[in-house]
Length: 203
Image 1 (cartoon, rainbow, N blue to C red):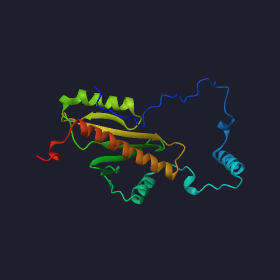
Image 2 (spheres, rainbow, N blue to C red):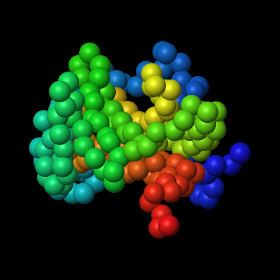
Image 3 (tube, one colour):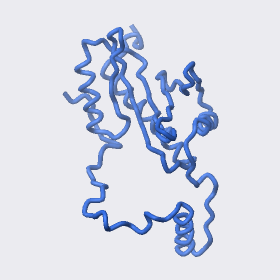
Image 4 (cartoon, rainbow, N blue to C red):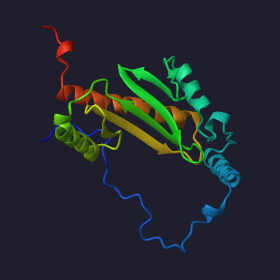
């Protein structure tokens, strides 16, 4: 149907970043190094290339993602937020509801989930699904999908999830949170174009 036209910024590159051609026996010796040993190697490499000692700042060292770190990012950027009755952290961005979840056995999976600020009737479900599928085929972020509520109304959802088992620096966390909010807002803007709100236009 061609819902979304124009450039594909942030789309799939089509490159295969897998380990094709590498057998299980051809292991990288770095696989057995500890984090401290790898960090020491990085310092030595940078020192050799730059001709000076390099010290990693605390913010440059990956650490586990926590609700406290997400809260700190929200407060630093002066974003309004709330904690609902279930203890989930969320906020409104450009009139859309976003939540920040941590999943996994070690709460290592960060998910930024957004919800479009309007509902769609069940009769339009096939065309909304087609729009979501087209978005997902052309773009990496966010994952777009719908949920049908018990009352038969359809909610449009955006989602950006990242496995942070190895930790994340402050700069990386900020980038991931911003990615979840900004790309989710871009998707909802596209849905707004498909279904303009008559009440938002002057009579």
